[in-house]
Length: 239
Image 1 (tube, rainbow, N blue to C red):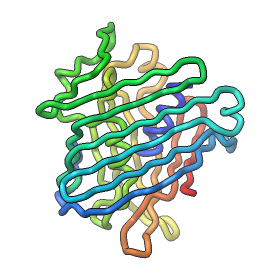
Image 2 (cartoon, helix red, strand yellow; image 1 turned 180 degrees about the horizontal axis):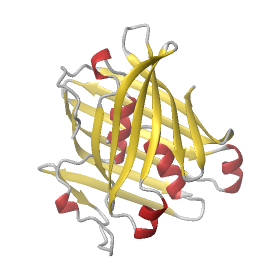
Image 3 (tube, rainbow, N blue to C red; image 1 turned 60 degrees about the vertical axis):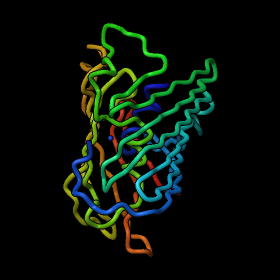
Image 4 (cartoon, rainbow, N blue to C red; image 1 turned 180 degrees about the vertical axis):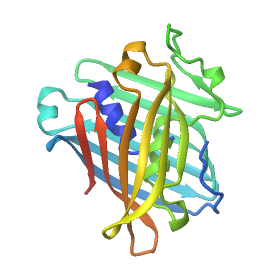
């Protein structure tokens, strides 16, 4: 279940940014998405964020619902903060809490010189060492970077390396094109390191499509995400 929710959270994305440098704009993001798998309600994702000058704060909640919620009540909450320059995010702290219904846990990451320092790091056969992950961003920063409102020049421009304290992955957005009254992007979430051989053999690449709609203010926001997961096709729609 944990892997299921994390895949949804990441691919609902989203996270070094490869987008062009654009002046940072102050603003807020407040978005809630319903999540369904194979047409059945599976949960919801809420993302909130605020930018002021060169700093940002973001938070999110991912929880099960519908039929999945009847089987297991699972909830993940996360927050992150740091600095932002154009499309480049440099986190300073990340906190996560998980409640699987059977077990509660928490973890945090702080950053020194761009290098993540994991609170409960436990070396394992596949675990990626934090000291090798300079320049990566945390999962919440990645989600916020992908779901915040953007200017037209930033639509579908994302290329982020992410580290969650154990694993390294990558999210990309590219190829913007019109589809109806929205803009469609091709996206990909890829497992890079820290995953077991079994996980990599099962699936290492998760393609998805992200759809932007133009706001009344002339910016663009994410309205829908369609992705493949280990559990079937998933759709996220903005409420």
